[in-house]
Image 1 (cartoon, one colour):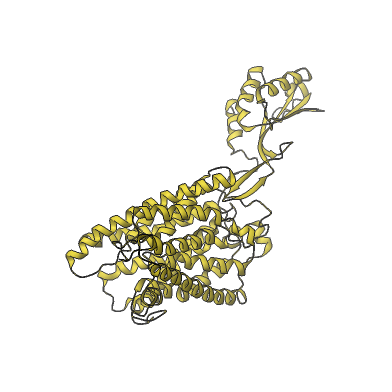
Image 2 (cartoon, one colour):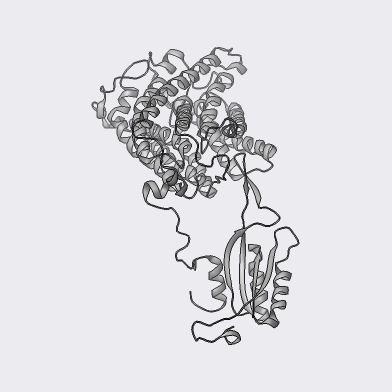
Length: 433
Length: 112
């Protein structure tokens, strides 16, 4: 299994890259120019905080034994008893914890106190992500979603995307809308950053999905055969779902709004990858295309819900990650094939309704658990530290208020002599500016 | 002396500058401005959210010229900047009382 180990080193680095910088770029480009640094900082600081906390107790809560909601937090405290040849498995799971927390930040753009984020991040990881990782990924006999219910989730439809999506929804309801939401234009300030971020996320997602292989462990030969067969399947599914989702998103927005947009393509990539995350091992290529296309199309519609229902999910964490995560997790019950990782046929392949029921149950448990825990954490911070910056600071820009910086210095002097137009005019006159 | 002020579409700026230079205009002040006229801006759609963007980017050119040249300069700008579509901009002429060249202290026509 030397090849597997080498592959996991790279897969782990790829998933870390999804947060730093891919997600930060994806979100940063979509935010306004006065908020881009804060937006990116939320991802960067989440990586630092959650990463260290993961080594302290995260791994142990997730994988330190059995339990319905969580394992013993002190069994493997600070990786006590974990040998270094197992570290890469810990680091791989750590990167999942990091990106899940960072995903939430897109919803709270422009207005959440940095200190509140810094406090929210470790508490939420501790009480919400680490237990969810246990319930879904450890798959011990008692673990709720994988062991008890038996819902399939290959790489984190419930543990990562529904988890982050629900937390985002709860937080924006507690935070309230941005000043001017629905009235003032809140245009993305740099979509090239967003396109770059989406592309890097896609690249990193191969580490995320393909690296999530769990071996049967019967014999080294059987594991090697599984490695070849399953990584091909998850790589192919990940690729095709993203492609189908781009087309699904663009088609829907072309018909609903008249034009196919670059933001739509970038969003489609993410929506498709979110949806295929739980299903990457369970479905075949046709299933991947179907799930990707459905996710792209439905998410393109779902991002408009915030205006109808009146919640300010700034960068559509709910519309993309919650909705996409539910689509992918539930549709396993329809499109899975018995030669896949879960070994069961879905509704479409004659497996009956059992798998579909398990998947829906898994989704519901995730939604209820995360809603309750996040509400408690959010309320506690709101009524102690406070969640929101002042109105004045929000209008002036959170970058300057919270970090004392501004992202762009476009006019280097009062005379604006740095602009291209002025430079061209003076050059033709042969004078020096 | 007259001040000719023109607000034009940004992509026409280079053509206008060349035409004015050919005519003999030796200098001008140019700024990137935004505004709107009868077209009332435009709309942009991001993830399904439609935004009215009231202010459209434009280029403003300011040139101080002799009384005799004002009409010609206006004509050149209009001819060069025209696309015939909405949003082509405006040109207006205003009287100027005094001009001083900062470097030499020359006044009025000598300062142009």
